[in-house]
Image (cartoon, rainbow, N blue to C red):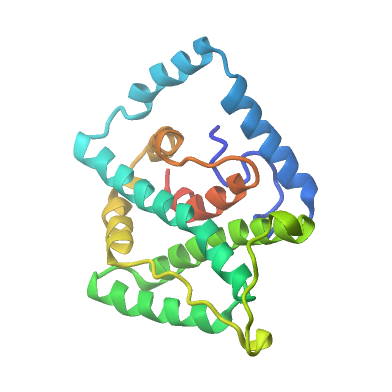
Length: 221
């Protein structure tokens, strides 16, 4: 089972980090496997990937790859958003910003002829994944102020806000285009194999990747 599958390392639900126990256990397992796996294990994983892709065309695999690449790109911008929100004393939980993003997704999904409920669930998962990374960075900086970004003067910290990054039409289109592949038999094995190649996370950020991929695994067979 892939470590990127939701709850692969723990049966606890994915939430913003509160208890460190689950995050530390997941992170330790992920780091141990990534850093200490012998060459034979790496070769075994590589040998298994063609089997996982059996029954899928190159075009179908490329649809999964495109979606995973865009999810990875969004995960990669979360630390920068965390820094901006820290500097400006903006809230991570920003309902107005999230509502604006969700409204945009609702409009874009209609234009793309994408099921609105699926689109909104996918969008919320990407928001939640970003918040997990942001919360972890803020926790680290609060515990080590010397390493934290310098905060800027803010007129009213209680109202400070930073806009949630848009998902964008390319990510929603990639999600739409991958749905047919995800609904095929053995798509879960394909998703495991391609996520192992394309989703690059470590430490507590593994929880964020699991959150981002959760809607895909909910669909996959």
